[in-house]
Length: 75
Image (cartoon, rainbow, N blue to C red; front, side, top):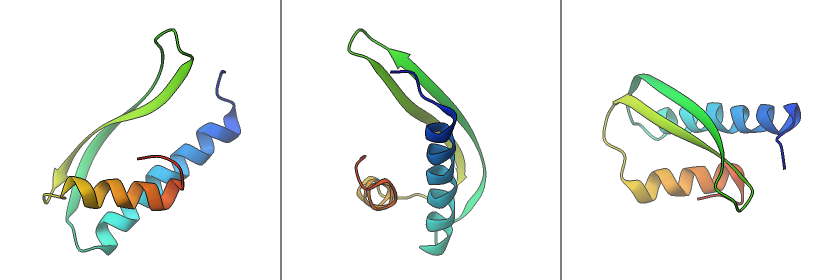
């Protein structure tokens, strides 16, 4: 499955929502770098992010829960 423009737009909106939610939960988010990658390891395509940001520490479970709440289906 190749990802269409609507899917990419949805994922970008999810990422923007995550940044807003991080700030709303009181975490500092100064700057960052995000690389969006689509790979195929033989089991189909997998779209994911590599994110490096400058800010306060966010416990993994909180970040995971924020992302799941935004996407409704992805940890």
